[in-house]
Amino acid sequence: MRDPIEYLGPRLKEIRLKTGLSLREVARQLQVSPSFVSQIENGKSQPSVATLYSLARLLAVPVDILFESHWDGTLLPDEKHAADQVSRDNFNTPTDAWDESRARISAVNPQNRSVITMDSGVTWERLAATAEKNVNFMEIIYEPGSESNSSGEMMMHSGYEYGYALEGEVEVTIGDLVLSLAKGHSIGFDSSIPHKFRNNGLTTFHGIWFVHGGNTH
Image 1 (tube, rainbow, N blue to C red):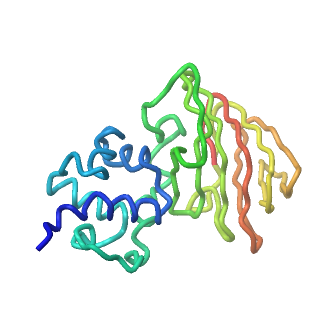
Image 2 (image 1 turned 30 degrees about the vertical axis):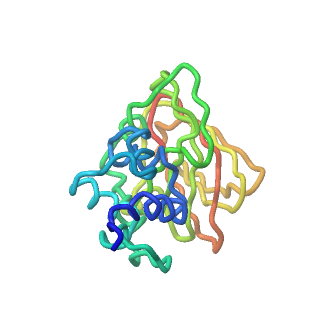
């Protein structure tokens, strides 16, 4: 009879690839090194029980699935992304939200972006992690019906922000001004003016955002 532990590495890698998580992102969320995760997948290292449970929760599968020779591809319903959702009230600026990884040169691809999903339906994806802490370069994603925060209140903060709409459309309220930001349109404004964004449409909005000296949506 084969030892179930020998299935752990291949099964872990299979499930990780199926869920679309990069090795680096798994390591970041578990607060371990990418090489450690790689060693587990290659059968060169065995994780602790606590790490196993953290892996299973991150990958949204029961722990015993990690030891089985066959997997039907089923994920636990609604768990994979629900655990990642945070309240907009948990931090004042994107700088507070991201991890501490910073460099003079930051090259990011879709597989190793840091991602934050808000309980209001908004997602931030970090596009660069340089040492300039007061500058944030991101893709922002608004699902249909989502808005800047779950309370719907206007926000204000120091600094300026600039955005370019890639697809979809959002309603932008800045003070008494209400306008639509649609594909190909851009905007820049003083963030000390009360403001909020909302996607009133039926399609997802994607935009590139640059925030200097304050927080964002």
